[in-house]
Length: 197
Image 1: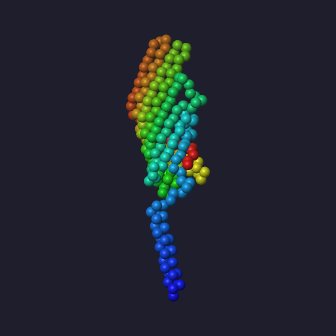
Image 2: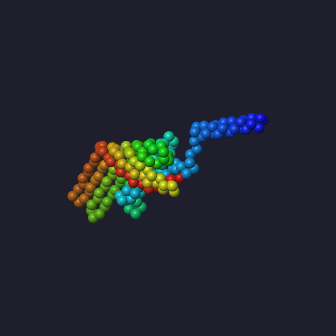
Image 3: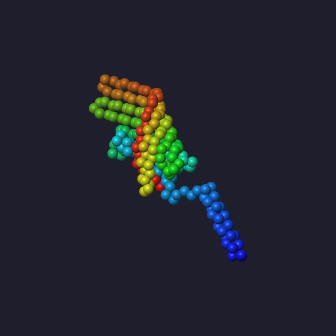
């Protein structure tokens, strides 16, 4: 009789411990050790335009992330006559809860700034070009991350830019100046490769 009682008590203790462990596991789920929370990527499309663009994405929690980017001219094209700089910051929200925190479809916004300066002097002719541009974009895209941590980020969207442009031409015939300032619609397109950890 005592042995039956001991077995029943032992069984109840084991069941209670198992239930408590499962409850704690549901309240505080452990993340997978290979979950990617940081991604460093570069723009494939930017290389075709002679630019080098690097982005960093950091997971914030609740399936949201912060992106920070910087772009400049490709060193192969860099010279004292032309300077190009750009920066961006944005927030993303990932829609697929069944994948990693930085994987799947997402929507987001980003704010951008670009500045360009170009000077040309040849055979009595000079040309000066200066521009600055600020913008805001709404993005929709998809990010894929391999088991090794390599990422592919593709997006498009719609946005608006406000540009300020000044140019000056100087020649033997005299000089002329032109300027422009105003908004314009913009369709951002991105294709980026990266590595996450």
